[in-house]
Length: 106
Image 1 (tube, rainbow, N blue to C red):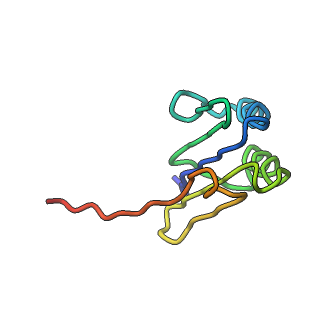
Image 2: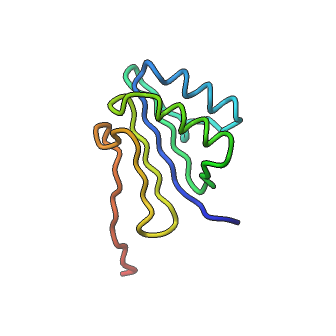
Image 3: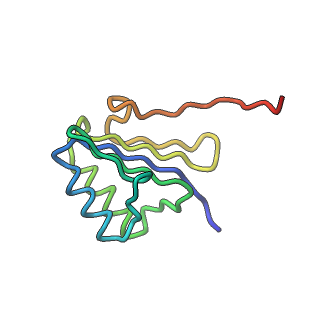
């Protein structure tokens, strides 16, 4: 199975077509749950994915993001381990953050 993560990326409107193009090039599934956009932003979210920078598609996505000014995008990856959280850019400026809560059975 391998290690799995949830990944979210938000970019300003002027970068959304470029990001979408990279995702489609690498055959990422873009449906109404994984891709959302409005006049200001483009948003990609995928859960239970092997996000490894050694994978060509991941390397291209991260390379694209890292070339942008930090205030133009937000990236958040939450791994399977409790402490495994990675951010790039300015995810908090886009309302992208981790929210943990405990669920009780009763």
